[in-house]
Image (cartoon, rainbow, N blue to C red; front, side, top):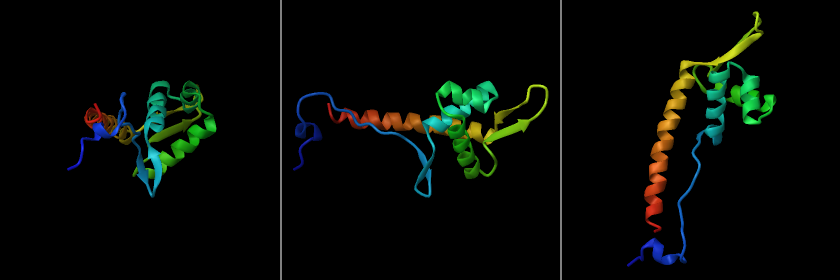
Length: 121
């Protein structure tokens, strides 16, 4: 008969942990970083300001955006140029839905991690 997993470990606090990403073709494309970038673009109306707020280079932000936009049936980030204020950026309804899905998925994942960690106590 197998022992409870806790009996196989030394005294102390153990937790099950992990990160959560959506992948396509074995490559990560939607996780905490892209979600935060999209949220900050929605808040600021600017890719540059969103990247600065995250301590991310403008180039890296654009690389993430190009990757995100290539994964959806419609772009997640919509840019506009010109105008009095020099243009700006917004996120699409599809991006909002992806953010909501990811939040729900993270909550289910958190519950799973807590449940598995309880077996180690």
